[in-house]
Amino acid sequence: VTVTCSAASHPAPIVTVTRGRRVVAAAVYEPQVTMTLAAARPEDAGEYLCRAENQHGESSLAFN
Image 1 (cartoon, rainbow, N blue to C red):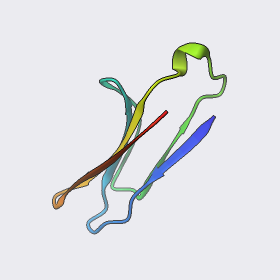
Image 2: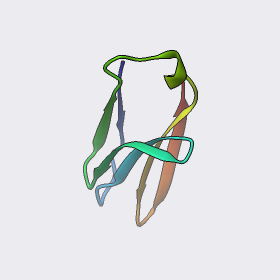
Image 3: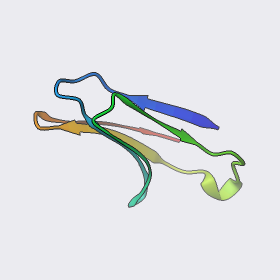
Image 4: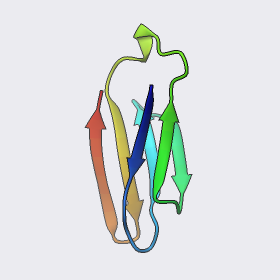
């Protein structure tokens, strides 16, 4: 399973993917981050959050 989270902003954002309180993927000052689960297991199911932020604000999207 591969998921790409992206955001367009100026200045470039910090983009993170979290599950609960754990960061599972991050990109600093890049427009996107890709999270890959090479061998997805049942315990990987659940809600993830893609969040982009810079000095002007933040935006997020939940997915599962």
